[in-house]
Figure 1 (spheres, rainbow, N blue to C red):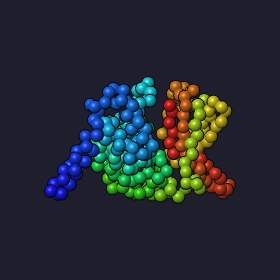
Figure 2 (figure 1 turned 135 degrees about the horizontal axis):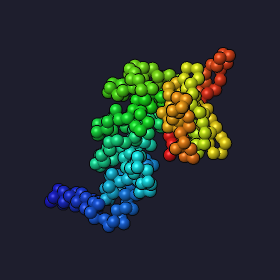
Figure 3 (figure 1 turned 45 degrees about the horizontal axis):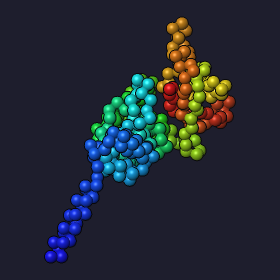
Figure 4 (figure 1 turned 90 degrees about the horizontal axis):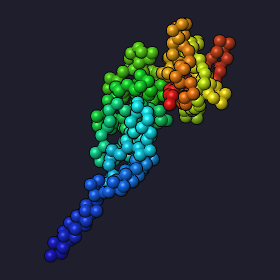
Length: 288
C-alpha cells in the first residue's frame, strides 16, 4: 500500500511539473514577444540557467534580437544562438542546441567568436556537430582559420587544419602547417596584457601602402585622431579602392563619413636603424 501511494505521489509530482511548462501556443502575442526578448537577453549575457527556464516556459529557442535594425540588407537579425556563440558562452550554446536551436548557415558568429580573447574550442566542435560549415567565407573573404591564425588561437587552428579548413593570405592558399606557424607567432607577439584593442571613429581620410615586409594603414577620423597600423598581408578593409588613373590605393568615397572599427594588438619590431619600436598590429577592420 505504501509503495502504491509513493508511486502515485511521484507520478503526480512529475505530471504537475510537466503540466506547468508552457509552449508558444499557450502564450498571447504580447507574452510571446516578451519572453522571447527576455530569453535573447539571457543568451547574450551567458545566463544558461535562465535560458533553459524561459524555453521550458514557452520561449522560442530560435528567438532573434528584438531591437535589430533591419535597414542593413547584408545582415538579418542574429539569433540567440548566434550571439551566444559570438560571446563565447559555451554552456548557453549547449543548452540552445539541446532545446532545438538550429545553426544558421551564412552566418559570421564563429568568425566573431575568433575575435574574443580565448575562444572555447568546444563551441567550434559543438557547432560543427550541429551543421556548421567551418569553411564558410565571410564578407571580408576570410574563413575562421584566417582569423584564428591572426589572433594566435593555436589549438583552434590545429583543429581546423585537421578538418581541412583552408588558410589563405592575399588570395593565396597556404598549408595548415603554415597556419599553425603563423598562429604560434601571433600568440607570442600579443600585447603584454594579452588583450586586443580597438580604434573607432568616423572615416574622413587615410592611406594604404607597402612598407618594409608588409603593409601600413593610416586612418583619420572626424575628431582629427589618426592611427597607423601594420599588417603582414594586405588588410581586408574596404576603406580604399584602386584608382583607375594611378593604379594605386585611394580613399573609397562611398565610406567617407561612415563609422569604422579597427581591432589591433600592440607589438614591436626592429626598424632600419636596429631600434626596437612599438607598432599597432592590424587584425581586422569593418565599416558600418
